[in-house]
Amino acid sequence: MDCIFCKIINGEIPSKKVYEDDTVCAFYDVEPQAPVHVLVVPKEHISSAAFITPENSAVVAHIFEVIAKLAKELGLEEGFRVVNNCGDIAGQTVKHLHFHLMGGRAFSWPAG
Ligand code: DGP
Image: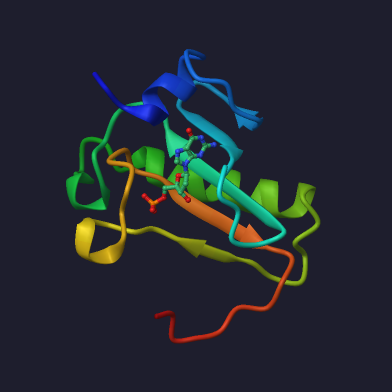
């Protein structure tokens, strides 16, 4: 499958990984939008949040456990933002489910 994040997960494309276990991988975003910007992804190829089902949703709960752990390790005790872009209209450019963990600056709301 021609998926950039699948290739990062299996090591075909280099990345700066900060976390990995049997089901989840996290690595620094190449186009950081904040001083800390990490992508947390399931190893299983799920195209987007629109394809989360009762059969595959356990990995999403696990991703949020990983996010909480990484936020502490990366010094984001003050707070952080987690973003998921789903579909072209929302700005999803890579069609492999991923959550942006961003911190180290203030964020405005509502997001544009
Ligand atoms: P989104 O727009 O929500 O689909 O986010 C995709 C993110 O993926 C975007 O912030 C840039 C990042 N990205 C794209 N290609 C690569 C890559 O090859 N390596 C890494 N580390 N990040 C990438």
